[in-house]
Length: 319
Image 1: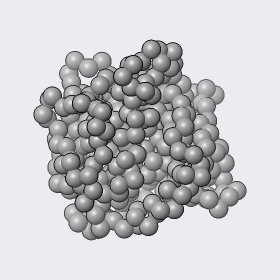
Image 2 (image 1 turned 120 degrees about the vertical axis):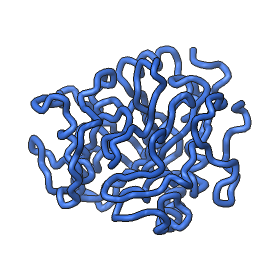
Image 3 (image 1 turned 90 degrees about the vertical axis):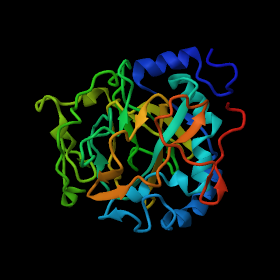
Image 4 (image 1 turned 30 degrees about the vertical axis):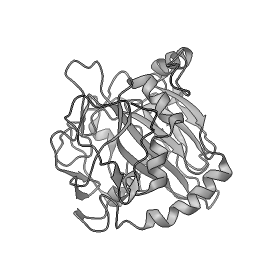
């Protein structure tokens, strides 16, 4: 039953379910009242991007979503969030004992916003201007992708735009990430597919389909309703999407995604910068975070123990 040394390890039954479906959860992390209080304290810090690794105008050009990336490197609450044992114990159950966090992202959805189109991500070259893979598994690895832990910082209902998954679709890639997508910010909130307002942050993800006539089987889709403070774990290669925000409430839906890999995987192996969503940013200040075990490979860049004035909270019980 999991790892007896890890309090929150997945059970054998949960691991079997995860390997079958490509996702597991949701799990409780914060009580809603606590999450709401933390979110109130967090908002002004998120607006201040001077210390953000891709913010404050330092090496960033264009109007981009990159300011939403990797805020765990300058906001202490998020730094502590990504190493919570409720998360890392379960992730290590899947990936093995040596785990890093290489990226975090905020996913806000405001009243009236479109849904996110169906997609999979294997090496994240799909929106990179260089078309180079952002992560590279060892040559003998059976599979790619990353583990995503998506936490509902606000309630995530169908009406507010919760996640959707198609179970069991994580083992076959339907998209070719070496293909090119055209970025068009004017298309945001202006596309409709099968009667549903869907898009991909200014891209059309269907341009990456291996078979242009293929369509995902939405009859098998499940909606992941989550209360505020819960998280869910899934492979990035799982077919996933989100509903539109119907605008029935004036509250935004806010998700926070942390992405994890075994330390054997190379992160940004061919690039010194990011080029996504119409903007560019240097990776000079970027670093992975070791959240479990140790790094014996030496091919990735890690953050120092102290970042922006606070001690980075790697759990002392992890060796």
